Image (cartoon, rainbow, N blue to C red; front, top):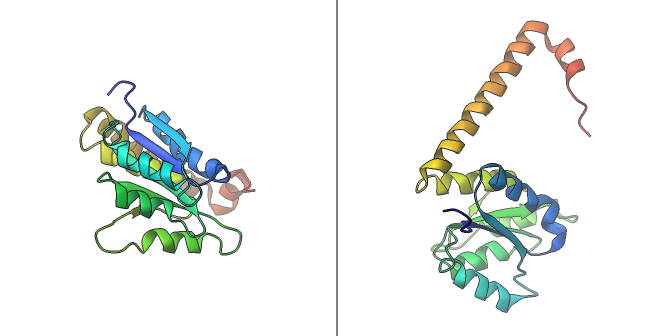
Length: 177
């Protein structure tokens, strides 16, 4: 597995990079070799076809595809490869990403795309690790540790809240921006 790219992260535009980079950060934190690039379904159709059709041969195991608006990239890629595709709907200005979500989630029978929340690239990265964990024990172990750490974090917060009460706890919380 060393240095062999296992997950491809693609997006329709560089404007999607701030969201899609979250998937890369997760994969990097799990030590999962990955690549990230722009592959537009509408503006670079031949590139998309070549990329998706050749992904399995290159050793890719999972593709994470982010797209906004009409959001055709995840579905088109899924139609061209036998690999699992995880779609990340990107929030749009006009419909807050609902258009993207529905475009990705409402795939026809035979062309499934696993779909995460709007701007949910972080979860897409985690889901890719869980899929890879069925084949790679080291990745499965890292996923298990991650889940245990999540549980510990929540239990610690619950204990603090119960100990000091909601009013004091809220004062200690960082302000959301």
